[in-house]
Image (cartoon, rainbow, N blue to C red; front, side):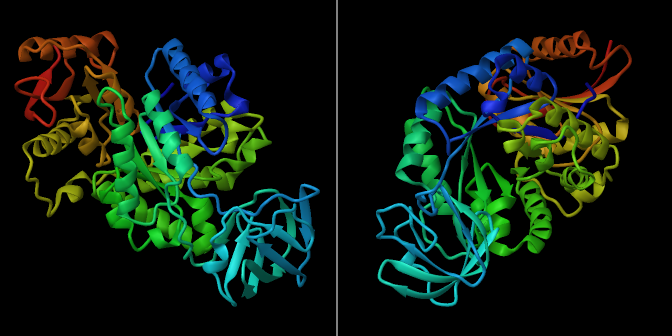
Length: 476
């Protein structure tokens, strides 16, 4: 399998829960497995996490597990017949007080506060924007609307308000329970749905830290899917370890046409702030039912790669689709081909930049030197993964190998672009550790006699944030 810088996140579901298939998917390019907490019980997720760890072990590699929280349920209730077909021009009522099942005239609401948060003239979008209704009046718990764009509306479909403005908290009681579940199996990342500001992310971090066992600290991913999150993007980024460009709900709230430019801006901002970024939603949607992607989907994935995303994500394609393995294989091919067309501007990246930390300066020095010497590899011996993260924020053709003695760090680094994390139980003695690292690279065919590589480490060894040495080596 050719070396690929961009990582692949795949959602686990009924279509991909066969142990042998999941192992094949990991061998074919999956770096992170997403567990969607919108479905299933706590025990289901614990069992799936074990399934992932066992499949990864058989495949001979470590991968990360991302627990994706459900977030607030802003949805219609259930219908007596499971669904209705709304026609343009008809009247339809969303009734927070309704207890009976819905019909062609009205339906209940999971989100009881909705009548307090909308007014006449507001536009509501149901089922990911496929149905559009306008608010005529609010009478007590009942929202009276007119259907503008009709269609089939089935049980528990989502509701968005055009332009945003719903106050539902990002973390529900269910999410808090789910965080405890995720920490019980040491999820490497926790994705927070619908955060509006930095406070939402800070609360999630506190909950993770309280629930964590043995000092485990997951990376926090903010899913940017609310209109309100856009003006607060920078503060959300700073309170997180990364963001997800969650194009589904975001497009419904801000409009489809705005999303591509927002995607580019979010990827750029994340990289500037040394955060990771995942691009998600409908990337290979047609492969739910078809064995090959559309040309538009190929372009979509390739453009995300060229924008500099760390990872591209598959949702229903691998969770419920007919071709989960084929989808991973196709996505890996697209990423690899797109990376061949990247425009590297390493010097421009450093123009006007100042580095106040020694370890960050060492990381930047390794990139610059390796680039100009034509090194075969950059090696970061890292305890926390910070050095590898900084290196991965800059596009460079030289592969980065992050050697760590901590499995948790190795798993977390699987999401970093152009970083291949490897486990090595290095000696505390610097010279011994450097020799072990070179032998490790040679036995894996990464370097051979005469090759140049750059290596960074800290002295004394094993101190988080202690990288203070850069060495340029020629393989003996």
